[in-house]
Each structure stands twice: as structure tokens, then as C-alpha cells.
Image (cartoon, rainbow, N blue to C red):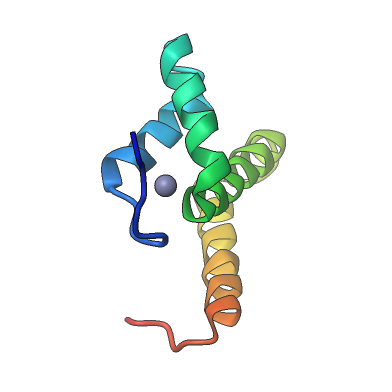
Length: 92
Ligand SMILES: [Zn+2]
């Protein structure tokens, strides 16, 4: 099967599976599918890396900092990075 024929326009269902993958909630077959997909889809790989980063930082800091405040800060930082990377104005 061909996933993500249009790079940068990955179906939302795929991204949701990505979160389940990070939660360890997928079956073995789904994990293999996601891993294969990540290798061919830069969009999902970026999403995966960002989400994993957020989870790592939140997990590490949740005893000291309110997670919601922290996550908001991280998300703000990420949108800054994304805006810079794509060098296009953020759509509000
Ligand atoms: Zn994808």
C-alpha cells in the first residue's frame, strides 16, 4: 500500500495512530506499519519527534512544574520553530 502520496498532507487518522504508537497502545502489526510509514513520511516523522519530545520533557518535569503550563510553553516554542523552518507567516 502507498501511504502519504502527498507529502505534508498526511491523513489525520495516521497522526492519531502515531499518538497511540507513542502510548504503546498499538498491536505489533500496527507498530510495524507505523515504523514503515515513518521511514517514508517526513511529515509524520517530524510529528513523531515533536510529540515524543513533549512527552519526555513533561514526564521528566511534571513533579516540579504544572504540566499544562509546561506543555503550553513547549507548544509555543514548537510553533516558533515550525514558523522559522517553513519561513512562512503563522496563520492565526
Ligand atoms: Zn505520514
